[in-house]
Amino acid sequence: MNRDTFFAMGCAMTVWSRAPDLSAVAAIFESAENRFSRFRPNSELSRLNRQPNCWVHVSVEMWDVIEIALRLSAETDGLFNPFLLTQLERAGYDRTFDALTDDRTCCGNAFSQNTLPVELDHANRAVRLADHARLDLGGIVKGYTAQQAIQHLRQFGPCLIDAAGDLVAGNAPAGDLGWPVSVGVPFSQERDLLRMWLANRTLATSGIDRRRWQTNAGTKHHIIDPRTGDSAETDLRSVSVWMDDAGSAEAYATAAIVLGLEAAYDLLSERMIGAALVDQFGRLLLTPTLAPFAQIEPDVVVLGRNVDLSAI
Image 1 (cartoon, one colour):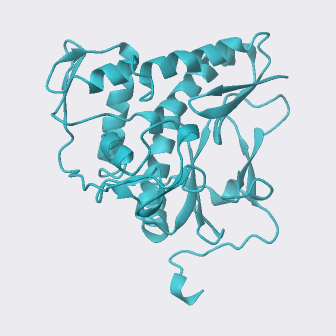
Image 2: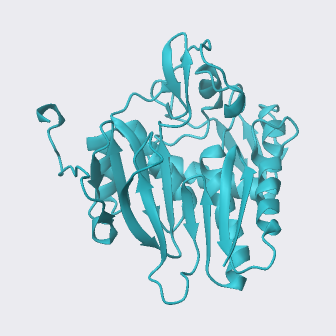
């Protein structure tokens, strides 16, 4: 099995495959970053964001991702919202994460989620953003791109991509149930909460433990609550969602962080979505869909359904 590690989308990526040349995977991510990065002024996304109230013809890839984002926003009742770039920048995330410094000035801004500020012209594959509307597709582009790369790698046999904790798997290695993967304790690189097998599925993790910074208004993170326009106030540290589609897993993980432990558990369970929710104390709550497939590590505190957090 060949392995390669490269840097893309602000993250370290690792790929495992029998492909003789893994450089094509890095090229797929670089192409996606050139198209979708909000930090590259000449990217297709940046050019689109600079043209409000204008019909803009977009690429097939941009069209596909925008349609996916709008569908997922509707599915999550707006808790996943791709139009929060201005709010994210006002919270202090206005440059690549590596370039951020502490003690940044920020100002929250509430956002109406009733009507998404975009029009689509299907016949001409064109998009028109409303005045002041700006797209941030980073929440699903990473998973979308990893799935494209997996499609390329399938021809060579078993494959797996670890996109900074977002795991997208093709076929399992011969004789195995899947690829052995784990969910770690937020803020820790040394301890796992659970292990499981992953094959032809994705396990996407969203959390507030890594992309954090200090501002004049306190600690902020990159998950914006569209109801307030500010970093979500949540009792969750991370959520890992297990689904067929990486974009959907990313969106539901984000929505879960915004909702908080109890409401997120109810939403994910009702929709039969596999998920591992980790609260602010590192305790674990599994949805019924994921629980049969997870091997919980010793000494992990496992919460029950509808737990009274105030009593713990």
